[in-house]
Length: 124
Length: 253
Image (tube, rainbow over all chains, first blue to last red; front, side, top):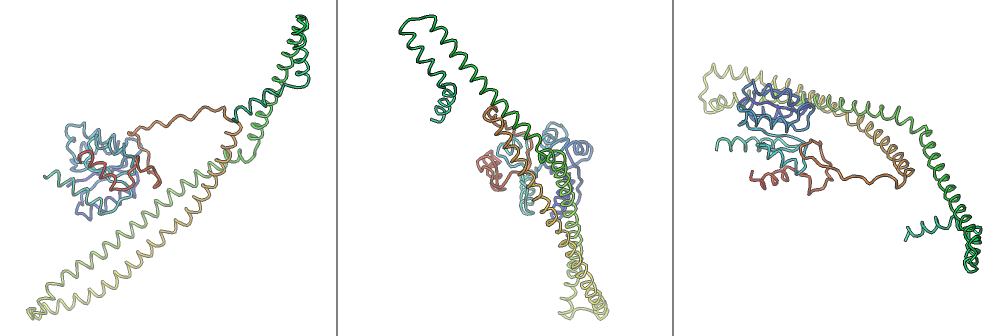
């Protein structure tokens, strides 16, 4: 399982990376915004995308839309981990095709739950 | 009520004795029907009224001009723009750097500690089977000697790793010193923002009610806004992961 973690803050990428490793996902890569992430996704054979929303360059919502619009990437599960907490934003992300939405600050248990839920649904 | 009072005081500003005397004279002239006097009086009264209005207008203009001058000559305002705001930006950037460093130092410590404790737990696990065999008297002499040596080494490793873990924990603790410095800096910035707020309020007071009404904020849900305050309106903002899950559930997630 190859996972791409996208966040403009290196500390947050490091936290997510550590938590994913704890869950047994060792194969992770990092990008600091959508613009860097998109070419990586297109060429890198990733299985799962964890992205922040608010980033310079290309934000996470745009990245999500780009992924859904790409023939090869459109089925990739996407988990949004973000501080954006307005009701309408969550609705918009859901409409754009996000598979899970975690608000910051989050706990290790929440992240684990959401990731498990995404994979359960994909398998089921 | 208050509007009427203001209007009355404005109206009365030109209702001086000079004006009122002419008004009386006008009513007498109307009775006598002397059109020459009537026209003369009306002209005089118009001039009187206009000159009072111009005087009032001049006074208001001068007051506004003086207020704006006082505001722009206020050294503190100049200092805010040229020193305090750049200074605050520098402080906030410093806070970002400091907290970033502290977070990384803390994570380095935590990651290193995890490796050390995992090492101990793995070694302990490798003993378990052999220890059970030993208790059941199934361990050969040679195996026992090996186990004995390894246990000796394990005690050394526990000692060594505990010391390392302790040192990493001290690093983690010391990394939290950013809170003191950044806390003080944030307070300095808060004070500066307070000062700007006071000045802005003064500026708004000078311009009075002449400013246009504040347009309602246009919300575009597609634009990232960053974190919300915990005190945000619960009808508009999810304040916990539970809220987010409820919203998603209502959309069929």
